[in-house]
Amino acid sequence: MLLKDKVAVITGGAGLNGLGFASARMLAAQGARVAILDLAGANPAGAAAELGPQHIGVVADVTDKASCEAAAQEVLRRLGRIDILLNNAGITQPRKTLDITAADYDAVLDVSLRGTLYMSQAVVPAMQAQKSGSIVCISSVSAQRGGGILGGPHYSAAKAGVLGLARAMAREYGADNIRVNSLTPGLIATDINKGKIPEDRRAGILEQIPLGRIGDPDDVAGCVVFLASDLSKYLTGVTLDVNGGMLI
Ligand code: NAD
Image (tube, rainbow, N blue to C red; front, side):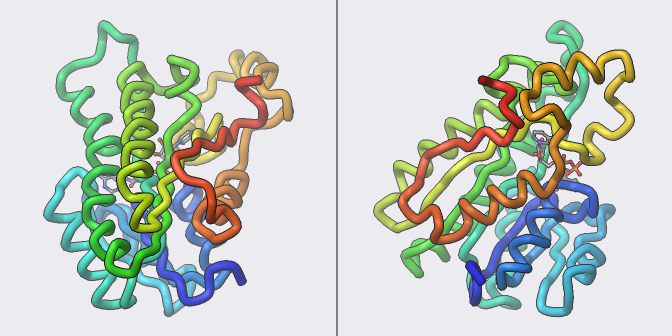
């Protein structure tokens, strides 16, 4: 068991087909108690119940600072500590640059980028007090390729911002033994893109992936466990490209 006695907080983790829930399941299998945070409509308590009674669901909107702080306090009250934060909540919108409205821009940046800041702010004091912690931020290959397969330029911007924020926090909190690392998943089969890949584009997309397949949520979850655990205890400020070789 890599994560015995650890507590993990996962934002946007309630979708049973998503990267967050797959990560929750794998962290729990390694002994962590998990707090799944998500919007009320996503039913985080129901998702946590799927994992077992030692795990909890907490309603939280990562775009709202007070909601993030209340959620972190609830996790500390109910589970006693916070060792791992997975900043996973994100939304995407298929848009061309000229079609992005101010509201679109705010919505996409608020969830991925503002949410990563607010949740990190909410958990860092507890991690500082215990002199240990691992924060894992979910960015995207869209940040690196300068364009998503399905997301718009504002999604690329938000996810590139996440990489900068993660590196800056890694530098700032190294002295507290808080590590901050990022993952840039390629195309992974989840609800965010379900039914949105046009059949006539599928072969072209697969050609860009040397491993020859679309990713599975567990492909990402395994990297989350690695970055969350002491297996990676001398890694901070790095980005793992979980993309089947898309950038080679
Ligand atoms: P998903 O839609 O299943 O997961 C996103 C989750 O975020 C949902 O549970 C949703 O309810 C939650 N969420 C949305 N707004 C929120 C808010 N304001 N507060 C709290 N939670 C909120 O999709 P997924 O593919 O599992 O996405 C997880 C992360 O991975 C996202 O950040 C996404 O951008 C990123 N990502 C996905 C892929 C992919 O191909 N699936 C690739 C690269 C990156």
